[in-house]
Length: 130
Ligand SMILES: [Zn+2]
Image (cartoon, rainbow, N blue to C red; front, side, top):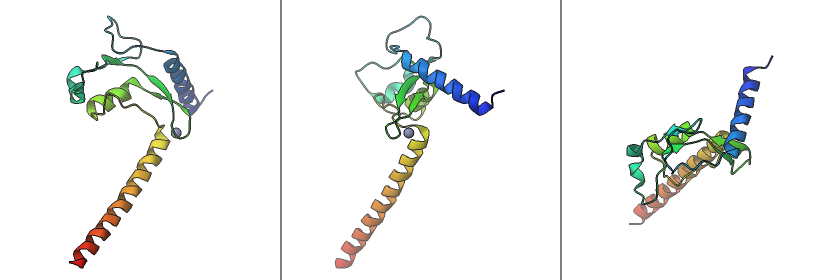
């Protein structure tokens, strides 16, 4: 018998394969949504302020992680969250897997702290000079 972890790994692998095979156009109206597609809410996409077309639905998209090159899938549900709730730019796409994204977020956060500390030191030095 397979463990839950093995089973979820198999499901994920199948999902990646299916997403990599599909080449569905999300901009052309369809009468019936493709299997696994999530309908887009145009009202929630208005922040994109684009003359380009907005997607009518989302489907799983396969990509390989920019950092570790692992095959990953950006699910339709995650895309809906990103574009409609997090108000992500319509031209942005997932580029990193979850662990690499965490590492990148930590790196950016650490860099931000260093930059702010440097700025504070500089401003203090400028203030003392007067
Ligand atoms: Zn990665």
